Length: 330
Image 1 (cartoon, rainbow, N blue to C red):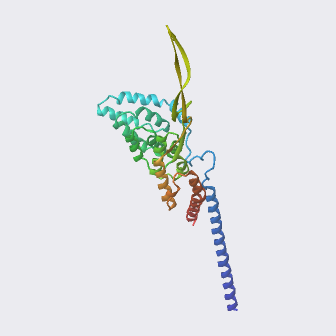
Image 2 (cartoon, rainbow, N blue to C red; image 1 turned 135 degrees about the vertical axis):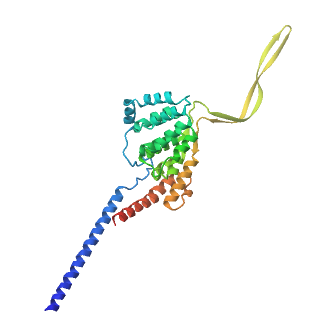
């Protein structure tokens, strides 16, 4: 009787363990399916064969330029900053008064004030400009966006370098917005600065734009012939004669003509291709490091880059994201 009871208890225990194992396995499978579904939602979009490149993914929602401009106008930031500049900076040489102005600058923490600050103070002396950069570096994501704008658009290379030194990785949403706009620019200087910044921050989100920004074409804007070149042989002949009459005399004056034998090259239109080497260097360095294999062989061929991105890089990143999700859930 006791033996039969022990056998029954053993069977019940085995069944319970089996059900628990099946339940755990089912839960794990559900978690894997959920992780895979979430990873698929976050898949990178493919590069189109034609049309515009999708916007760079932004990590945070940010106010539109119109809202920022309206907010700045409503609060009269430009007038306030101009007042500080006239009172404390410019030709003022008293260190105490200049420091008071710098302290007042640090009170502008609204992102709507950043553009007026840049426009009004960017030509001031180094103490003011460096203090402004330090102020931006302490203002979170939007301060990083202001530094990125200066690193790309500022004409003074020293200020561009100082701005870049204060930027931190990974790139924030406002920084990605600046890079997105600058890499679409037809201005080679702006696009090159943006490519260098993207490489310094290892902003992988900008890879699609870097692919198509590494070379740019521009058509000449002119009317009529841009240039011409003639290679020919000229033969002079008498095309006619003109009678000349004088006192007691008469003669004929020859009329000479010219025949040209050869060809004329006329240039009526032209397209210039600009190879932006700094963008290409950043692109190759970023993709090689992230993918784990060299992409130097793709050169400047946009078609090869598009095919590589769509058929090799996107599956690689999707698998990477899936493994990360599974690791989080385990």
